[in-house]
Image (cartoon, rainbow, N blue to C red; front, side, top):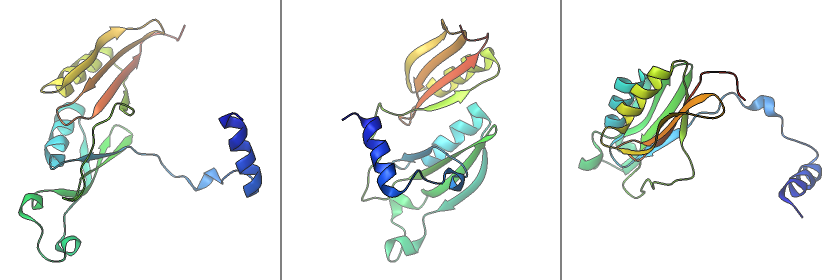
Length: 162
C-alpha cells in the first residue's frame, strides 16, 4: 500500500482531514549549541533581521542558578526577516543540536545581486555548497551552510519559469 493511500485511510478512520484553519503560521525554528546570539548578530548583519523577542535562560529552568556556560544563552528568540519570522534557541546543557542535511531555510529574494551578497555573508566562516548560478528554470539559486551549521537555500526568480 502506498503512502498516499495509507494517509487517506487514516484520515477516513479519523472522520476526515484536520481543520487547517487552525494553523496560523509556519516558522523555521533553529537550535544552536551556545552560539544563538552570534547567529542572531550574523542574521541581523547579512539579512537585516530585527529582534522581535528574546528571552534568556531562567534560573527556574535549572532548579536554581543558570549554569555558567548558559548565562549568555538564549532560551528563545524570534527574528523578523522580510515578511517572515525565524525562531531560535540555544539547546539546554543536557541536549545537543545535531547538524543534518535534510533541512534548510530558503530565502526567496527579489534582487539577484542581493542573493550573491547574502551568499557571501552567510558563507563567511561557513561552507559553500552550491555557488550562485543562473538556473534552467529562470532563477538565480545558491546553497550555503553558515558557520553555525545552518543550511540556507537562496532563490531569486529572474524570469518566468520555463
